Image (cartoon, rainbow, N blue to C red; front, side):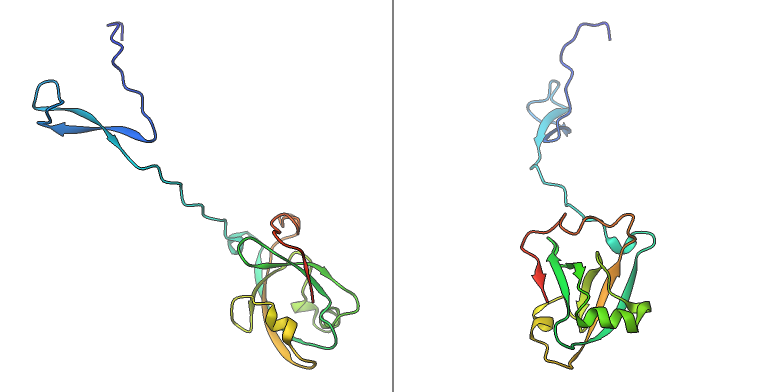
Length: 158
């Protein structure tokens, strides 16, 4: 290191040196290094799967509409809906009393409605007495984010 040469190259995320044999820019004509420019790519952002969180579980419940559902939902950036309120006077509250093992709670994520992606228009358009099957993801309360943490639009009342 004491040679005083200042020709050391510094690695850059966009430029790397690639050995090239016989390239005209190499010092001895037989091998050397030339800068290789790589396109900068944004790393693919993988959102943590909340299904993989220890203690989380999926629950499927059959709901029968009796009046209003009594839910307030917030849409997340990944197009899932988070339950932000279960109102005492709706059919969800009645369902929860009758079926505590498959109850819907605040912070549950709505994964499926009738086996399809969560399109809440199905719930909005459901007629009195119609049964709808919902699949939710329950994440342990200790690690569930606040309900408005990922909300991009105004909550929806059902």
